[in-house]
Image (cartoon, rainbow, N blue to C red):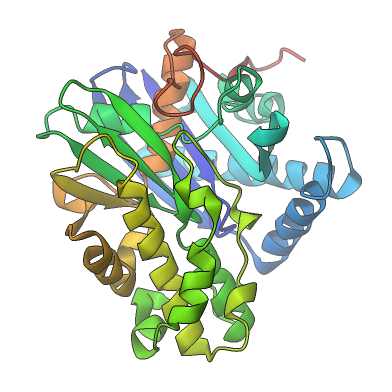
Length: 364
């Protein structure tokens, strides 16, 4: 099948779109990928919706959130058209879109997770069958609703020596461990780029620390780092997941811009090291995807903290920027085939289960 995956992460930097050919099992052939950045106005609108959603005790309609949802659909529909143009593929040839939407709040401890962006509207706008709301069924069944990409990691890593671990450094970091027998263990490890990005925006006006240059020029403040690591969440056994906003830059306030960047980057590294203690066995390799793999300082700190050499997934021919979008395309095909996307070892759900709501064009 031809499938498009769409991912808009908690960093609010833009939409990733990937076109792949897959059977939802072992066969995966990447075809095209593109990223479309959000404007400053769109980022501000999505940030406002997220801040509002986090004040609610449950998801509910609110004008700013409805407006943000409409923005998500419009932007994603535009990106689909651009991706198809880039690939020279007609929409009629695409079997399904996997539409993650935009997470505005993730509260599995309260029994809900909230991704805005109406799947039926996107199906109608593109004329392509769309699967959305991948996480809610898992949470309703007692799972964490995250991470979901491990099933795709397992497909990519089928021929690698095991055990192997794949670390995704997005706004939040998550790790997938694949055992010798194919067993999957996955969970969020802590903040990845999210806190560093927030610090950079607050202290320098920049959206991120390019190549970790500012962190490299600073000094890690051990007292602040120890304070941030003194959090019982890191001692919890997986499965477990986070909302990006569960941690803040507040403990680093008062540090210089460089020292704050260094300390928050070290925090990510230390949380990855702590996460390895929860794995069933030490991985032979630590493969790294997501935007954080471009941060040389972060990778060096992870290496020092873990004793493993982080290897960008690109060295294996896997596009570390496209992986999450590809994963949602892959999971959309699995949903059409009624195949599971979450498992006891990845989200804590009792039984392996599929997820996602199927929307067919014109079915309003």
